[in-house]
Length: 551
Ligand SMILES: [Zn+2]
Image (tube, rainbow, N blue to C red; front, side, top):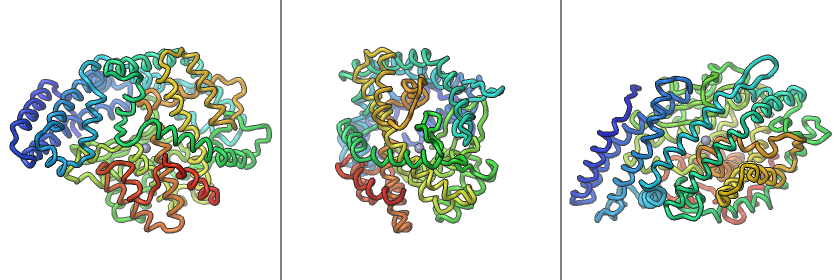
């Protein structure tokens, strides 16, 4: 896939031309033809931006793509500005009704929200914000953890931190803590600047705090912070007892009698968590066999990924942390990035990230490409998290005779994640409602939330009790994103409960949801696809009742 830097002069000209043609058009059909030109043009631009982003993430020390990334940190807000002006013309079109028939009513709601979230007056702040996030990413990507005479990056430390030998994982967690102690004030400084920057953006756009703007930036077009708050309340009331039971069982299973410590977190079995048995290459091959057997649609998808070498999954020292799936619109092609480290997380890449990629691939030929691809993350994460469960019957390919242990771990871990996700979300609501808080006060708030949401952890005198959030990239990169994982998980678990009774019918509902993309509003789509909306009263309670019998 050849890369060329986006030529800003040409981009400006093209947007001006498209906007003029749109204004001169005599009918909705004519406008839609112009809009198809826009698809082609913007697919090209966004593919180049995405290629630079991907190539920077696979080697954060590559100077060429570091420069390109800097270029887009600066210029992406300018492109966004042009894009919004184009869409504004569409929004104010006299043929709006006709255009709604072509691209859907959700598209227009999303344009309205995009306009609320952006104005040229905040471009300088957005540029500064991008640079701060890049600084945070780079700091963590180049972290050097000294452990037993070797130097590791953060993701390479994970196997030691969940080691079956308690002394090893204690020592590993201490090594990671030592690293965070050395950078905690720098991260505090970056975050303080981010909070103040985002608050200033909100002020310039006429909002009291960043929260409302943050919701618009997440493209939330059918629910508010009150809905999310109601969801967290349900979790505190109905879900926490189940979580606490899961941790009691876990303590008994791993033989901890003196209370679960921070370094016991993520350990589910006395003999250690089940690890995949194969090499990275074998994991990919097993993935291919699995998707061949699962359905004709998944077979076609996975062959496409393998034939076109669309995985970069091996861990290297200078790669960015974490994993993601992205999409190159010009090539209708998903791409998967990960850092394999020999733990069960590697299989998540084949199930979770492939769930995202599968959905992208499935709707790649849809004519209304751009609007339908504008999927909220609370929806997109259902595609991925449900795939983690739909692939359950094949886990013996990856874990051999420990497949059952993996399934126990998977659902237990998903349940334990719910309060953590809520905590990350509540923290950000507190932070942005009180932007004048000092870094020390923010850490105090996190500590309080630990006691509400993770009371099972005995932190000792670890600084991580107040600083754990500094490892959670989403808090820095995309504010208010994190709760989407929890909302989605609650939906994926509903599918999990149902597929035990009727796998085929549940799979059909899932395919329907994937196919709908962003065609309808989230709260409308879920009931059509056999799901209860997470923040509606009773959803969490119903789920707890069903899960109680399973774990
Ligand atoms: Zn995901």
